[in-house]
Length: 623
Image (cartoon, rainbow, N blue to C red; front, top):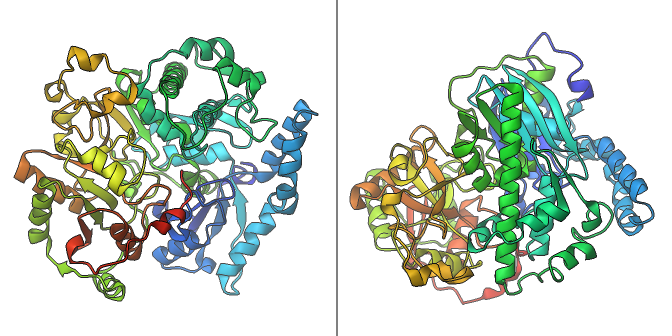
């Protein structure tokens, strides 16, 4: 990290602002006294999904949450080193010359106009926010250092191995670190173009989904398929060693030199061109999804065993885009060599803003780290919240019809509505940081309802029917419902539904293929049980989200079920809602039955009539 690791300061620095930007999922985070006090993605404010621009709105929010102006910031830290990234770009083009000329010509204007002069660009953007005040000094972390810091420093572990797996940072695509106290020590890395993240993205692209946003669809599609292509992948595309290290055969890929992820040789290997976006999903795509998922899990498992053996630690921290593969995480937790695993909730590039700021605090400034046995991400509830009077004024301006209820009346009322198969938009507390809705900006329903998955997918989210929904479960009851002996507060672990709750398949049902399996109930909680009897679990804790915990408790008291369906409060292609206005607009555009904004309850039937107009669906680019 050059200047960041060069010395340590005698006195503790003031507030540190971390920024990630200019690739995808721009974000800002504010660290005060070593604590992350605010963090948010820019997309939530601009309503442009995966917004890559400078996170001006997120910075404004973080400063407001910290009660300071930009002149109160001690240091601004950017999450990677653009000049090193440019070096990698040039070396790659030279290595593949003249094959990469078209890609080189496409990339160079952006670099020569903006990215090569990123230090000035960042300063120019900060000046717009400074109101004439002097700017704080600017420092740069390395990309994987930011990932590693975001994973280890907020974790509940005094000592842990850290694995970062993503597409690519400057050069590293996989890196291994040892975290101890307030220090992070880099051990080894795998460099571009050999990348597990880019391999998975290549299959995302080939199956017709959008790179950098559709990878989770590929993961959700995998259980519908068979692992027919595992040997093909391992025999042709990936040279995987027993220790988990690997190399790609780049003759099959186009991402190093071209404008697409895969090339003609890849297409020939798998029997045809990539599926067209929004085209029909066939059994072939399902089998490919299953195959690359199994290969990914195998790489992660082998790497985990190697790292544990080398470092001799019992805990593991994960970050980087691949760490959002919650199926692989679940296997690593259940079958791997580690006692416990902690995953940064904003594991992708957004979390780099947190990591850059924490790396500066601990590594450059040499500030101590206090480990209490709980993580320090505050449940990932680090975004904006809205006060009672403010909400009332906003609802009045919208012309919304509402009633205000105290929690003692509201929670049983909602439990009754949910039991009656109503779908509820749930907006309360601080907005979540990261890609998952965790009971701050969620759409919720009854997991026991056999129709809830299709209703939510087709009438609320307007998305593909195969997409599974996640359960929120009372943390103290999780072991009664899932084979899970650890907390999963950030919905980043997939676990099996307990055997006692499963519904055995008939001989005829077992013979079904692909999407035909979708309508076969797998358990007494069909809305959250995937076709392979698994679920992406969120354990809800009274300490970090007392109101969501109270709602689950009320539902449990009424029904005996400690689980709710939880999906993000948005429609397909839209970022998760941020403000009460965003929530009301989404509520009115979909077939949700109720909206709750803190203590304000809105019934769809009571709202003013609006003319049916589906043109808004063109607002958001499909993910």
